[in-house]
Amino acid sequence: MTRIYKDISLDALFSVPSVSDFDVSKKSSAIVYSTNKTGQWQLMLLDRARDTSRQLTFDNESKFGPEFSPKDEDTLLFAKDFNGDEKFDIYLANLKKGTTVNLTPSTDYTIYPNPKFSPDGKKITFVSNRRGRFLSYILNVEDFYIYELTGHEYSDRYCEVSPSNKYAVVASQVAAQDSNLFLVYLDSKEVQRFIDKSGRPLEADYPSWSPDGTKIAFVSASLGSYDIGIWNILNDEIVWLTDGKYECYNPIFSPDGRFVVYLKNTGADTILQIYDLKNDEIRSVGFGRGVISSPKFSDSSEELYFLFSGPRNPTDLWLYSKGDFKQITNSLPKELNLDAFVDGELVEYKNEIDGRRVPAVLYKPNNKKRGAVIEIHGGPASQAVNSWNPFIQFLVSRGYLVLRPNYRGSTGFGKEHREANRFVMGSLDLADCVSGYNFLLQNGYAEEGKVAVAGGSFGGYLTMCALTKYPHLWSCGVAIVPFLNWFTEIKNEREDLRFWDLQNMGNPDDPKDRERLKRASPIFYIENVMAPVLIIAGANDPRCPMEEAEQARDKLERMGKIVETKFYQDEGHGFRRTVNRIDAYKSAVEFIEKYTAP
Image (cartoon, rainbow, N blue to C red):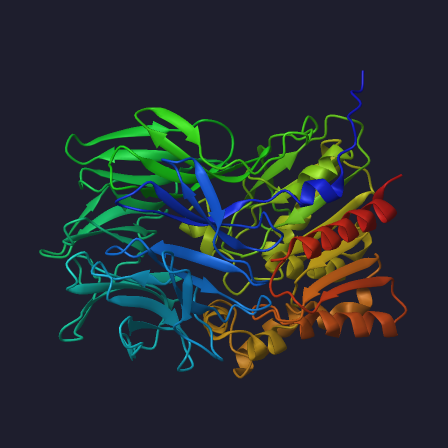
């Protein structure tokens, strides 16, 4: 018997807020976090001792990366962008006085939204392309003076001063898809590169200082998967905590230095791992299907905060303490009925060109199927996981089956799988996704003529590749913030993204790369499109500039193809404003239902 579910309001579902970045005070019970509960990303201050909360920011822009000053918890650091352009400014707020100062006003360059206080509270580290490529900088809080910390040819991603105020550790993209760590001596500006025993640079990323400032926990794929290691900077010794069986991320030390907490990827979910350095023991901590991220201790080694997102749980802040879990924020309205939401199932199928096994997450509706959607994640160094995804779950609640491929280039399945997309983007990674179409048909999950393809960012690019290279398969396509032309994309995108593209796909100025880039650009094959297309873009997008979407719209319209567009003048790469997110995904769902449902 088919179970009938009460319809879920799309407006209500896409209005559900979530929590992003947060910080925990070390001397009080305060927590600051970013949430879009008001329709825009604002900062909230939670006092757990008094069980009170208040909104700290009110303007119509997005705020991320909040951090308490380690010396004055009335002082708060955060980053704010403008209409999604990702050219963040760094702000200092005095919570007692109610004042806010912009430390980097009128910037016409990009600053990453992860600035960090030095342990003495006198300096702020940040990464910016203020000189044309992404390097690390230090800003003096007293006089706002900014000086460059790194001047190398690599692309920095993160920088943090040691607890001793003696060093800074810098994480950089160095070549291909490898990252490396650099230790900078703050007094002499001497730079030491992280190398292994053979004298070669060791692939490493996501550094975290030990409380005494003598060790750095890090993530490295040098052993074949993302593993957790500890670098002793006093003697250059490396201790590995994991063995490559699972990908692991985000290591942090406990305040007493006894534990290292990290995340273990189990295919579609992540769980907490607590490594006891004293007893050489690991404890796994998990409490349901979903994804844990951003672990962070308070001043106590027994209080571990983290974010959790699951199929029925928007991203919220949780606390793990003495073996128990407590939900700190609750973003899901009680009246919202999520009975029709389902867990994602990890499946696998073969690429029909070269036989590569392709892992994927499959969502099966509980009610009658109306069609299927292959939804392609962005990145490409990202992963389809079992997290909160209103777009997918709304489609499932309406009777659609959804397949999310983790095509080559995805994280979660080892270094070889992640790097297997180099110089074959738009071809073999596309075939990984398209092979999912036959997987659906062969297993009775879908019927010909009733399969849509959709994706955002790099997933939007692969969606347009699918529509141009395999045009007869699809009932329709939805491309959200895509790019379509490698030549204009590389020319117009931000410097860090250009660095990655040149390393992993080729240089338009090099004759030997041009033909590959042309073959991989769906804009040159746009006449092949047979299915109706919806293209969604933001005018301030620094990653996939809106010009990419405009190229496709103009050509499709001239050819008389069915094409609809949604362009948002106050958005960038995605949807920071709830009203735009509702409008965009409502358009996407209606478009799929119009061309895919029986």
